[in-house]
Amino acid sequence: MQVCKTGQELSMLRDAKRSEKKIIGFVPTMGALHKGHISLIHESISSSNITVASIFVNPTQFNNPSDLKNYPRDLQKDLELLENAGCNIVFVPSVEEMYPAIDTRVFDFDDLDKVMEGQHRPGHFNGVAQIVSKLFDAVKPHKAFFGLKDFQQVAIIKKMTEKLSYNIEIIACPIVREPDGLAMSSRNLLLENKYRELAPLIYAILKESVIKLRTDSPLNVKKWVTKMIGNEPLLELEYFDIVDRWTLKSVEQNSTKDSLIGCIAVWAGNVRLIDNIIYNY
Image (cartoon, rainbow, N blue to C red; front, side, top):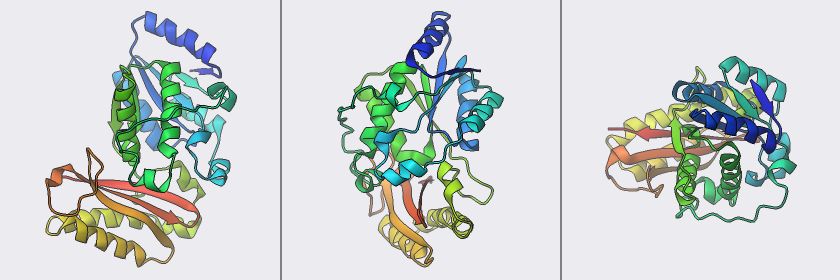
């Protein structure tokens, strides 16, 4: 496995592989890797000749400076995990490498960024698009792999890819969960024990909402989920919405239920957890 710290190092490797007609798969990460990230590496390996991962904690997508400061980092462990998984190239740039100047670009996502995460974290998705586009330009992949835990982010990246005319296939991969159902996240490492014990309740309630939606309206299911989370004083609901999975617009009355997804954000102490569930009928 080769580790590159600069775009120049990366471009030499990238161009050599492209000249050999190799298919390049790309997995962008912010480090603190877990089995969910490694599942993306495996997906890339299975459908690409060369797998590139990046590790970069992107400052422009954090609304809260303390969240950026406290984001878990363990580069040596991450590199070992990637090498063991079969990754070929890892790009580990500095902030100065990725942002030699302030990035003033503002992206248009056709209002996909105005709801849920975008509503509660203004500017977050613009920061995501800034760094992902920079990484796409550096890696020049044929395929890029993203986890569906960040469902809205995947929709945003697909829209950005379309708007900027990147010839990159965006592949969304299933959520990987802990044995107790908690969606794997780097932020899980920050959970105090009492919150970690409660956190699986989020997915348990989402699963129950699937059953509820079979006989009730999305509006009533939203009220039920809100009530259930509210019954646990150690958890604080930031939002839960049932939206059309293509437009991300909120749905209140019965509609084509195979197009619906429930998205949730919950505070467990000082740690913000997100999850979602697709309603298939």
